[in-house]
Image (cartoon, rainbow, N blue to C red):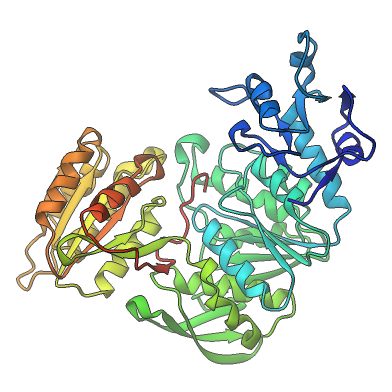
Length: 488
């Protein structure tokens, strides 16, 4: 994060300084976790669902914070505080105002990325492609909400030419509109609309409406980059005040691919159609969503004037390999660690990779997919049916995933005689039993996919299995999971 002068903090937040700070005081960064405060930070006290950051002002002071950004209601009842205070009406709203204040002074093109699935992956690939010719910033991880997005804007240093910002907006109307007012994107990217977080939004039409708020924010000189294969995303074109570029496999898209060939862990090749040219392209991305990730990045690069030959260098950036890892497992097996999160498209994509690898024995360990609302049963059955087709053994984890197990039992398996796979299920309270089962079951030549919703912490299973493998982390990154990030 670039430094913040006290004067900028006060002007941006509209806050008041209580206490003494030296003239020209500057803060190294803003930090919301008192445990991570370092000398010279401005600690922001955020009231969460379970904890109130105001209770940790003293801890931040002990760790060397220069001041604390706090709410007025809390400050007025304190007899004394261990830090100078920047007092505001409400800290999160003040943080958002400060970020908007900083954004106004930055000469930077912002690319905002949203969608139900694949935001983080798309952000990483887009940024890597643009970085071949532009000084580019990408927000770390999935800092995409009403707190993370402002912190990301404040992280952009002067001289940056393009900022690629993942933007959430999965929980309520108006969230993306708020984030767009702060970040002021000139290019809006919408990856897709799926029934992720359906329990919160109620209908898939409502989800589409929230994503369209980013398109509404595109200025007349801006560009909306839309997944033309998704009818709900394509329909957003009529709301864009600027130019529209569509990408996908369907005929009629501005950036289009055909003759797609997936080459397991070797990458994906396809024929690219762009601006009247046809080019044969190979990218080191794997899985069912690889071509979509490549196309969206190429579309954004094209919107900013880059040539395909320049953009292809960006696909070699190891930073874009953020999802799936192929790791040595116990007893000579291999583990596909795609535990970051799960949705139906990303589950099907990962199962597609398992199929493409053509292992001696394919094993799918699938956990619950959460927040799917009324379509949960149907979506779990879709995944179970595909798992039954590509795996020799299906292992489910959680009550919802038992529906996938039921469907897998009735599928026509990949066995020579079409028999269904072996299927077994574990409850959420049986994590250790599941790990023991796999340790006893796995053998040389097995490839095991592990995937489920983030809240299941299935990455801990991978750690436990790896602890018994006796091998180092020889990881191969990929994009087969393609998104389903928290808050996606």
